[in-house]
Image (cartoon, rainbow, N blue to C red; front, side):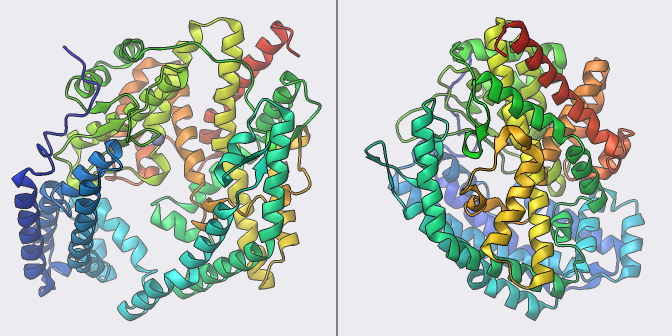
Length: 593
Ligand SMILES: [Zn+2]
């Protein structure tokens, strides 16, 4: 079997000139118009089970075979990732975007109408056996329906979204990114300043932090006005829709229960000692008395072991073979069928991802492999997403193809972690410690920092709702309180850092940061059970095959897990505690502390 290291996109289209592109667009438009023509004028599917079944079957087929663009949008999107300066592709892609919006508007009516089904019929539909494949799809629509407003009101809310939210956040981020201070004699962009914070030279990183503080100080009044407008707009929307807590709309959209998120927050907060111990260890390893706020991500040690792409493929293949034969087979398929684009090249975008489109077309993974150990873990991570997609495709219909936000990063981080553990077995103690510190830094940022951020957001909305306006000094105090809560005394809440919430774009999307923590902790918890009994992989596969067919809570129930219980989340935290203990042991053994 020969491995391909560039994408073979021919299962989609042969080239940008392939006549099949126009043919697919036309066929998609016809199918969507036909669907809307038939169902727009009917309302019997809102009261009659068998008519609803027929409508949903047709809707599912539409999504399975065509989506909104017949696979065309996905094709140009992928091509542009590899050839980002190609203006022909850009122009075609923009045209497809318009087409996609038009098609989306054409179909909008269907789910909006489903939301108007009477309470009595909702119960009937959810109990009906023939509608079982669509049960959770309907359940989600019915559940969020009570927060919907009238069509007119929805239109007003949608229209005011730009002036009330988007233009404000754009103002802050554009003003921040315009700043170009000089550090060490060179002009630096806003994002370059952040990479300088990880510089091994203390003078350099302190200077970069000083410049960042100056920028935030200069723009703090604008930041204050912006965030108050954002908080006010959110409050108005929540009141109109009838949400009781500021984070309820997030839970609703993400198909997760508030008590599950609360149990997660509770578990992580009661283990903040893990992140505190981590920063204390890092400060000692770096021979610093304490870390400044901006130094928290400094790396420890040198990680210079190299892995060629074929080494990487061999390592991951061997591990997958021991975990599950099907995992291994799917990986081989990705490698031999050209679903992975491995190496950096001119015009190719940075980073890595795994993209999927229709149930009937392949997933594609993009990498920028340069031979670092990080690249090995990246392939494991992205393949986790790809594997997840393939497992869902086998079992689910097109309306259930996808993952809930709270579990989207479970398969990826699970495989990443399994591969890392294997790599750690084959390196010396020095490298092992450096790798563990890097891994722990990622875990602390993904779990503890995001939970602290969530708590910061909660307090921000609650205080705003009490007071009606928050002064920048108040915001700074709340921010530093929550940062200190997980960092502890080894990290100084440095003067100036009280304004660092300003660039944190996540808080403008409201409460979605919990999903970083939940994805990783679920995977750690599953890993915990898998390590105890490798047979557990069968349950993990079942979990990964479910897609959107059940809510996260129901999936867990099937695995006999109660996710509203703190102890479930604590299993995952135990795994991190184990890694930290190992790092502490190695640091002592190597006489580094
Ligand atoms: Zn991911």
